[in-house]
Length: 130
Image (cartoon, rainbow, N blue to C red):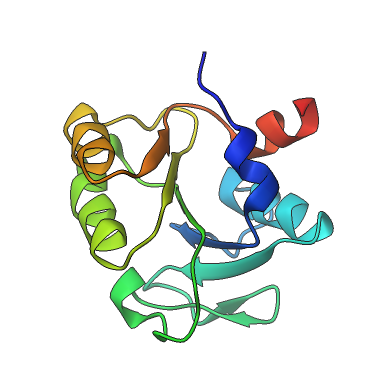
């Protein structure tokens, strides 16, 4: 069982693959996170904004002065490694791969760099349980 105690110290979450469509899981999760007081940073090159917040094309596009505590990933498992590598380079300490998203190479890379990883699990369901 993965330990999710680190969530108590999270304030800012970059959501990679956040959709602006209310029927999408990423939208529903982001809406929940906002309702619980988290700051979200949308990362999706195909939208300009969601929830009144600017969407960035990539993690690299997020201004350096914004400290990201956790990167939540809604992408295909095979697309995760470069996202995780970028997050690690940026100094992000926690990576979350949503339900259905798991990349062993990315997990190994993150953990070798001291980054906490949760994979194939929904952050919203986890927070509701805690």
